Image (cartoon, rainbow, N blue to C red):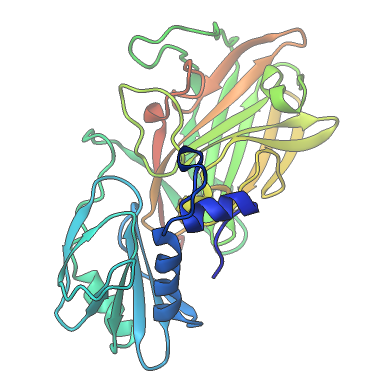
Length: 360
């Protein structure tokens, strides 16, 4: 285990609690003690299982041979009380044995030590009440059921989201930043499927001509797509802006090549995965223009939508927007759900999808 620091000054601040306010005078910090507790409890034990504890918590089982250690914490939302069976020994993040069976989960990890097998741990965790993981609102939404395909995707059986005229004022009280006026015959259809290798889309845009435009950061000025994800479905109806687990991508032809530019990505503290912005390679893209149709075939690798997980039953919100260019300017846009074109972004308006099991 290593401290995630970038230079000696940050290391000094983290370990010794020195900072500009106290002229960098060294004094004890909790971080090295917390790290020592983690190393003493887990040592070099491999992580053998991730336990299902909801979208805002994490639980991992480490096997030391003579015992199992469950590292458990809640990184999002209010603290949550959980009652555990008495056969577990509980340590707090500083390594103190608490002796409690009722835990208050928060962003500081707690360690549960037991001699039970991994399967036994999984079974009793399945019986625990981790609270109802709710979306930020109580509104019932119809979910787009995205089917599973082991290998070749049969797009005729994939989930379908149909586009309509983009509404830059979909959020109540918002002001338009762009007048979207698609032409008669312009159309957008997105089909979705998934497997362990990624979330797949086949997007068909129908319009006259094909006119990519803009530089890498402004591909949205020309014909192309914008695709966004609210991976935890926690956007608020009354607010705008992306949260720290959301994504937005531009997908278009740039310098003659299919190009994906990531404008927004989830932070690594959700999943310990670094997701750089800019032109990326973890989203595969193929673009074919035929007559009035432009066909985009896309595969988002698991890390490109993480912390959303590619497991049956997982759900998130998404939107696909097609920008329409006539060779001179962007004259309109079509969208499967509102939000991307709203000033400041409005992921609350995105459509909800759910992954369903293997397609027969």
